[in-house]
Image 1: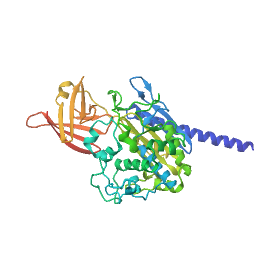
Image 2 (image 1 turned 120 degrees about the vertical axis):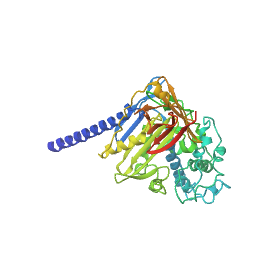
Image 3 (image 1 turned 180 degrees about the horizontal axis):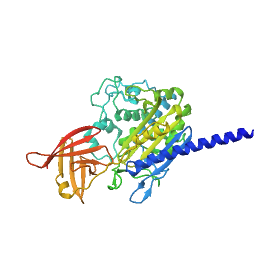
Image 4 (image 1 turned 135 degrees about the vertical axis):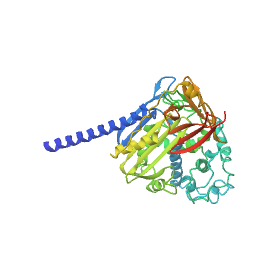
Length: 447
């Protein structure tokens, strides 16, 4: 008996040592991103019920000098779609609707509503025009409330992008219609239904709808730019615009409860989970992206709204969950999440290497200032401020650019490079090559 007890204790200590080693490696990987100003926020990583890392980094509010904590609350943007999809499936389990129902059943007269089903809306296979592609609307003031009818008018009379069910195209418009259907079926607001069916039963006490109205000391400030280059606050987006596509807020702790609730069919039935995780066209299920990682089924999603980024990465088969929430557009949660997964599965990975830059004098930098036009919708203004070159794309905040060489520049927090080119006739720099994700485009100086 004594030998058995000793063996058990040794086994326990061995597992504990392995967990501590993995936790340290995960934290070190996150710190690489933090030091390069590529992450600020909160991260939770768990495996088989054991939390390996739950830690916060950076500032919740720079002006007040308040750091993020494990209780920090963030907007989660498109991670909200998985909650909207779960509401639909709960209503189906209650026999209040069917994913096979046509839109016309709930919205008589909706264009092509007799061809578009709830399934199409959930899986982004409806062919409905995505209102986020409306550049005029997206460039306007989104801080003011709008009616649901006015949101629907942004897309209901647009022609279908393709025949419903024939292919995949991500559409926030489809999820807006799901909100309309939820409210039509229940006679209640989406916020009320969400609270009743999901948030209250699962005790997600730090999650909810309408971040603007939230009064909580753990609420974070969203930044378009965060770090040594300065702090630029993001303008708020009204929840009536984000609605069922992305108006939710949460914490890493609550989202881990959400992960646990989806494990073992404890919240949704096995049949509903099957629908949720089935990869339809475009490797998308119902509110989740579905693919494989290390020969395991992976369900994941990212979120992005002004000032906030989020990512959740899950391997249900192994009860693995990586949750990353950030209050900075500098952050790269998707890349960080994949590195964390590689660590968990003991696979090779490569941490980002901080680019080296050189200092150039004002006379050299001044040659590059001016506005460069790429197309009617995109221009970039380069300015010199206190010996530092900045770029400001159309309708965007300005960002610091750093010199790799005398003519090649980059932005620290994004995969963006700029190469200035001299006119062989005038001897002036009047052309720029913009490089992003290994693709390039050319702009001409206008002034």
